Image (cartoon, rainbow, N blue to C red; front, side, top):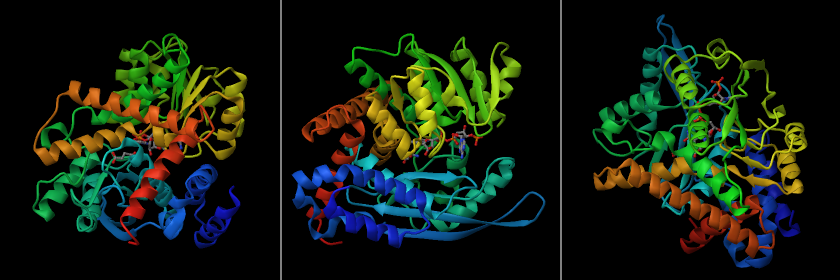
Length: 447
Ligand code: NDP
Ligand code: 2IT
């Protein structure tokens, strides 16, 4: 780490003890900042760095709700409004029992820089709750969402803060959240994205993160004269991001051989084609079932419990489940098996030691804040359409999504070259996004 920046990092560590995910995200950015400091010292004046590390606002609130048996349950709600330097706070909501302040702060921090890379006018934020939607009835999920929104509504709005989905928050939850927002705010406004197509949602928002991830990886491969055609691919998770990454990869001729959930993974050597994927979508989105049910339906496939998915030999690996799901041992196994490309669909899925292994090996490594930015990018397009009271065709949104992913790819490549680390997408993404956020902050004064 750059010597001059060390005191700031030491301070952030002291101030945020007990927040390991947040400190991990900060540390990852810091490792790229020495290069910026040496070239653009002026970007660090007015204590910009310390300001960037402190969220503009952190909200924590009680969410009481009644379960189907009439018992009152209490969860904790969060919204971290990290940065409005580039636009209204923007970022998803996560409902998962593991949600805590550290997780919310890391996700909001990452979101700020990811959103900058889209070049759309979006600030960064994240929110959610330790509510577990698993095993809950639709009515329980609705009552929870309504209670969550009873507090959140006073903090959000189409010009202030615009939440969307993330783990555990999909079309069903956004529908309930939007319904309650509209009722108590008495405004039909784009204060949430990922809405249903009938009430202000954008074409392709559902697909955007997974499709965008594949477009990004395809641009990386193309730069090396390669493509997805015939490549063996493993994708962790089987939720929103994983499903549409699988769909687009298969459409480009890849053979997706594995998907997973928090219980384990399934391996299908023949490849998960579009018909099999329909089964997975129905299983996970409608039935809310478990991935092991795949092997009961498709003979010749197998299920392995635990987190063993990265041991499968593949050309391209895409972690699309959660943070720190791929460690240095997993990285070593992937490299040993000849993997040539890792593209992160989840947020911070690779541990720092895993990333070092990938960078040292010189394989293609697409960091989350660049590779999974397609979701929030189409959220940004949904906000534009809502503001214009327009709705673009699927074709139009897809063309814009491709152009945005292409531009992010280009930005990473050009920035990495300019800063003496050619081909290092991680440094490119960190440096380019930091420069944008810091510059905007300096221009707006000490606020
Ligand atoms: P979903 O809730 O649709 O799916 C999540 C998937 O990941 C499920 O298969 C789930 O398994 C698995 N998973 C979740 N938590 C864990 C865990 N702690 N350990 C192991 N597996 C886990 O979420 P998304 O697909 O929307 O999100 C996946 C990742 O992508 C997250 O990191 C999210 O932040 C990121 N992301 C999402 C975007 C979006 O637009 N939705 C945009 C950009 C990034 P199980 O069902 O067993 O819980
Ligand atoms: O991590 C992410 O980028 C998201 N969950 C999507 C955020 C959004 O506002 O669409």
